[in-house]
Length: 348
Image 1 (cartoon, one colour):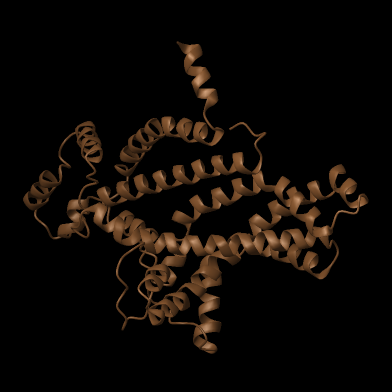
Image 2: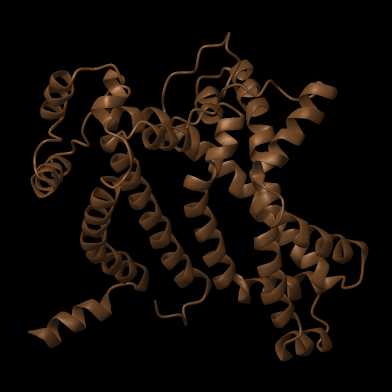
């Protein structure tokens, strides 16, 4: 029976094997996230009932609210109840906003995902292009500039870059849109399709809203790309330089293969570690973009998580961590599949 199962398993496409293997790990991983975060969040200072009612609240009022919120039950009882609710798709009600956590997350997730999506595109373009040019044209101006940028990018905080961009491009030059929200305050968002205002406005044929959304995206996207492209650039340089000096590249050049074809082949052989770095950055930015979201009043998941921590909003914080963990697992699943596409020799 085991041999028959293995035979059927081996007959499946490699990409499908990767997907099924990952999905089998999702349940224990998500349960581990639930278990650890639930108990760690309970260690946060502050009583949610006192934060909601204020320091002048009577002990009876605090006790009644704690009982209504289920905070007087034992921690294990609260955990079992929470797991049961999660299995039914209920992430609880935010103590601070009084909205279902699912509703809050659904409203804020598109803002963060849109920001990360365009920021990662620009990050990959800047990091990979500069790295390839600096290796192919070693000693040139791009190579020298990349060394300076590589040193500075990791030392400059993102909020400082964001403030500089706002000062120069909005305050002094007046080229950029005001750093408040995703579209102009006088405009109505387009009908919801994907949650990405740039895409939804194009679907609705509303070019005015589209250009407003693009204008509000420019500075935060540029801020994230400037800060994170340096790490991707340095890794790409290291990997691509090793491939560029390899025997097969020298042989291809000696055989008269066009330079652009050699560069494309060398870059393809460098992709697996680059894809790993990109996947890490995508997961990292889900929480790390919080300062950028705050500076530009973006209203995404990062700001929501910070508010949850400040207000000891247990359901909101747990819901954010659960959604973020699921998102990161999906990203790593995509990375594993891309491994297969770029290099079938790799066994994940």
